[in-house]
Length: 104
Image (cartoon, rainbow, N blue to C red; front, top):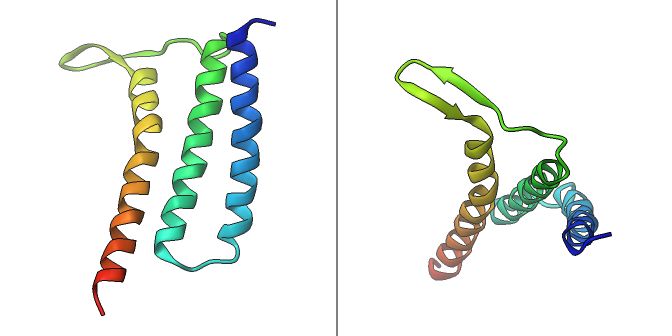
């Protein structure tokens, strides 16, 4: 097994553990900041699964022809969204916590 395959499997395992505990926490909290962190973790695991499927060749590149665009790379847009959305959610959670601590 190559290093990249081992690395992908370790990411899958650690992401699965983090996602499991995030789902457990989700059922016990109603706090907006924590829910955003949990959603970020779930989307991060979706990105791990998506990139693993691409690395193993299960998902192929998809191009959809749209009016005005020569080739619309759907897989790249999905990948960019899955990579960056958890960071946006974490940032929103941190902002909520900062505002909550700052306001009396």
